[in-house]
Image (cartoon, rainbow, N blue to C red; front, top):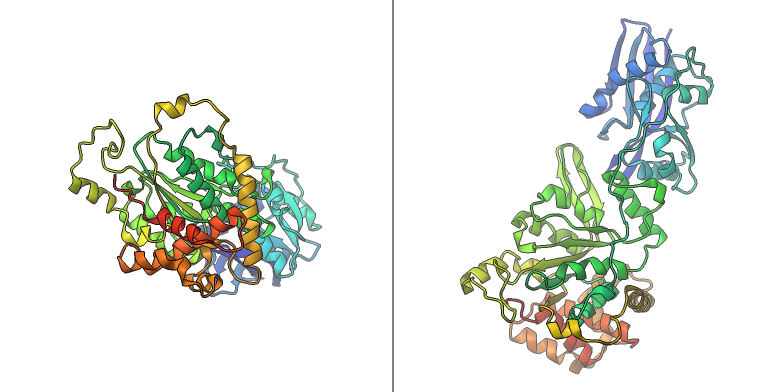
Length: 513
């Protein structure tokens, strides 16, 4: 006598989910358990976890030859989230379940005692299942809140395998009582970055640059001595960015679900995330990697938010060079032996750097001990092609005592600046309606130049900088993008020559001390 049980699971490749048919065939032959369909090492080990979990639940293990097939077979399957579907398909084939389970998606890792453990990537997996027409989903109890964030999903959470068996009309002779397995504590994604822009004393130029960066989605370089306020300014940028819309919130939440940094109790990630990797971080930590199918790194976790790289020249050259792809294209494609993953990575890059190795160049009363050659070598670690992609480049001068002692109105708060940024972004959105772009930083130069019309006098300063070799053609386009952002902040329909000149100045100021 043979039996066939079928249910569904989801294989994640990057953020893209693929519904997998899990078939278990039980044949009257020498007892064995084979798992086929391109499983990785962690999934291959599910044979032992499933056998132990079924036995611990009080259900006799079928003494037959069991073959579990994961279809489509050519699609790589990774991780432990297939455990529950393998167990359910096997029990269905053995006749232990009364209800049909072939249209139900099961996700979860099994412990040897039958308990269900939470897994990464539940939100994008459930979203893929619902999109494919499978709305009924069973997940570990700890993942139920995250799965419920997907519109249209009918989610049922279970603490252990026995509860799943009863859910599908089966009977369990002994009824083990297991408390739900708690999710591991994580640093929640998209949390508020403490501090208000009003805390920044002086630094009027730098505060303005932060506002322009937020309004247009521009990348920013801050160069100044230690203690000048670069880190404070960078951390305040995320506060003036507008909330994420529904589509972005789901996408950002899915990234953090796969990365394992999501707190489902807080719902969808509504605020732009802020990532600040240490300068000792490896390329895999920043752009993503790992064995098998790669996981998202800090660049993807910062999608639609801010990636802050303090002491930028201290980062490895490979780390900095790998950022060029997402800066241009808004996504990362990572190739590993286990497959290729594509993660969105449209972040705002904020680089902070000292003017020299000792950090004391460029400020009054500061005694720099670095030679001119050492300064050039230090800053040359930030390559020309990388800096050419940074729209705003600014010197941050040390705050003077007279600025600290100055009485007067408190500097503008984050809320006040955020309101202007929101208005500027709304103006850009109206202008870019019907195009694939959402912020000025994404718009190609030819389109911007056509919008300026035939009046070449607006571009006089840009043409002169190009002729003198001060900027590249890419730099000229980026200066125009900044000019459009300045016009949006001022409420003008198009940039003036002064806006173009200021956009150029924000790219070409000296930052070598």
